[in-house]
Image (cartoon, rainbow, N blue to C red; front, side, top):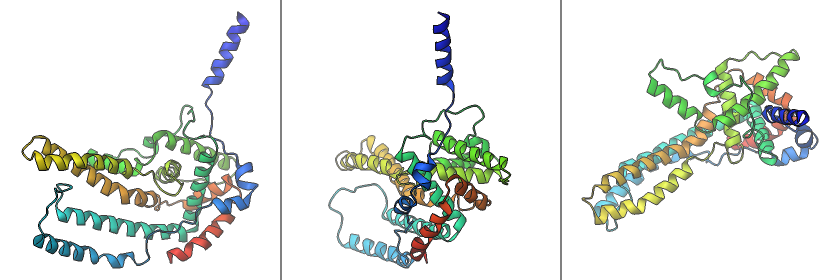
Length: 321
């Protein structure tokens, strides 16, 4: 009995022992540099260098659309209850934000420290998705950072505004993933400090850095945020036929205002999330003040990373000139 109790106690203690994030650097990152070059992203922008020249086209197309609609009245039921100007304003918002995203991408490619952070995030994503989901399934010991620890919900501008800003900056990854990335990065920073390296970084820089890594882990390929716009667009597509039928056959029904409101909400949510998911991925972390120290941390975590950064910059920079 005593022996069985000891075995049960030892098994429980093993089960409760927190597992820490570890990276198998030797097998995937240092032993095969050619694999790194093959799998590293080139960060080529999908946007045209002359995209901004098409801005005048939007009001011209809008004017032409109005002219056409006045001479040829609508026959089919309207897809949405949105005004024409709302659709074109959404198009303009998307165009402006995607163009600004390209400028920020150029900043990340031209700045060697930011490029190092970007490629280091890709390495962590690659390791996480190639092997076991080590960061999502980690068990956290007491005292591990949470997002509210390093970036509290400020209330100096009002509770609602502070909550919206916080949500907009952190909605792209789960708390569990954020904490896993925090444990990995702050833990290695502690090791560097013990070796005599300086890591004097303020909490807000840590938040921007960890948030970028966590967002990359949650993303589809390590170079963008998770696509939140897709499920919203799917919901919009499902609601649209019912809203069209209700407006056409039951115009006085109480369901029509509800369906119109739901359709509008889903449309604006998708129109906001689609360009914002790529913009926010780069924008929030582009203002890191101590980026050199974070780049050194990632180079220490992944030996040989700095050499691969030079190659990626060389390949990607012509697309961003």
